Amino acid sequence: MKKPSKKELEGNKWTIENFEKEAEPIEIQAELNHSVLISRCNNTTVIVRGKANQVTIENSSRLSLVVESLVSTVDVVKAQNFALQVLGTIPTVMMDQVDSAQIYFSKQSAGTQIFHSKSAGINLNVISGPDDDYKELPLPSQMCTYYDEEKGDLVNEIVAHAG
Image 1 (cartoon, helix red, strand yellow):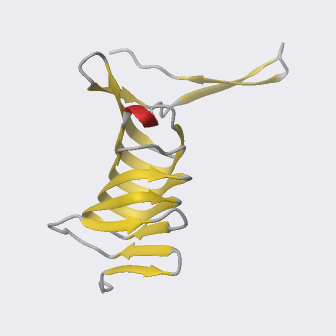
Image 2 (cartoon, helix red, strand yellow; image 1 turned 60 degrees about the vertical axis):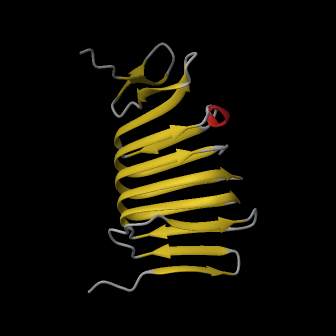
Image 3 (spheres, one colour; image 1 turned 135 degrees about the vertical axis):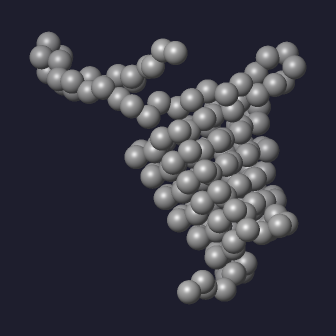
């Protein structure tokens, strides 16, 4: 049984949950001390205006998130076909169990760090070139690890597929 949709600010925490196939984007106006939790939202676009502290996304499919700026991080757990567009700056994106994602960074957010685990099919789009066109760069999803006797340590290398 589907739970009712909810968009609510409780104290310093925005909660957006249980939205399904929304025709119009869900917009919130965030402040520096606000955190945002987006949970069980499918086929939905969420726009976070202003500068929030952080955004957490969980158990969502075909969710599109547009953020202006964040103090901390976008944390995504268990999402399929996820899209993120950053208009300003964010320091970090963390993704765990994400299957297929498109991330678009503004020029100001090009230095954002991305941490991902148990994820595949993630493409980073950064503004590049004289015409400010987006350049799509796939994030590695396969690693090769082996023990190097000379170093006495593990070596991790990205597996690059030609083709």
